[in-house]
Amino acid sequence: TQLLEQSPQFLSIQEGENLTVYCNSSSVFSSLQWYRQEPGEGPVLLVTVVTGGEVKKLKRLTFQFGDARKDSSLHITAAQPGDTGLYLCAGSTDSWGKLQFGAGTQVVVTP
Amino acid sequence: GAVVSQHPSRVICKSGTSVKIECRSLDFQATTMFWYRQFPKQSLMLMATSNEGSKATYEQGVEKDKFLINHASLTLSTLTVTSAHPEDSSFYICSARDGGRVADTQYFGPGTRLTVL
Image (cartoon, rainbow over all chains, first blue to last red):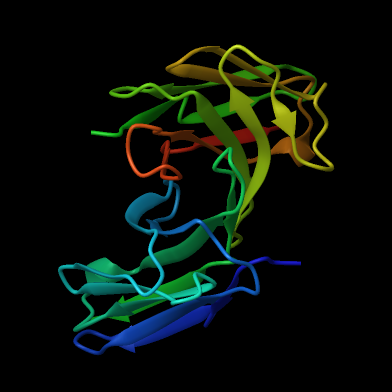
């Protein structure tokens, strides 16, 4: 059973369109991270959110942490082909910092 | 900053041999490192948590005698796949926890592709 539910599993859009990826759970997280992974490479950290209701912006990417710290979303504005990749959310529930990963959302942006 | 390296990036070996994978934090000290494996088109599966100077903690279903983990220093952890078999073929990724930053932030290495013939 996946502790973190990511949706959608797959997203294919045209360059210039917007997209949102969701990460939901019934558990409360002390922090939540978003990563992007390309084939054959390790995940690259995009952002860490720690405060309920927090909103962080990274250029065209906007990350939101739910008030109850159980869910998060990633919104990409005017997507570009370089945004193509596997987006993973991960939350920490214990003192060791052990991460629970969502199943991932494969995003494909075509020119 | 916060760079994690892995070596080798790719290894092909014969069935029955042992393979060692190194994970290094290059610009920070990592008291805790994690080892994951990832199958094609799937998410990361945590194998074990490695703490400097102590025994690793393995996730349920992961054989500790098969996947030996040593965290000898604050910048190095190694994973040894002993007597590898074709079913051990996978993408192995390590991560390191940087306690100097936001508490639970992990930085990942580039991964090691293991192919067992």
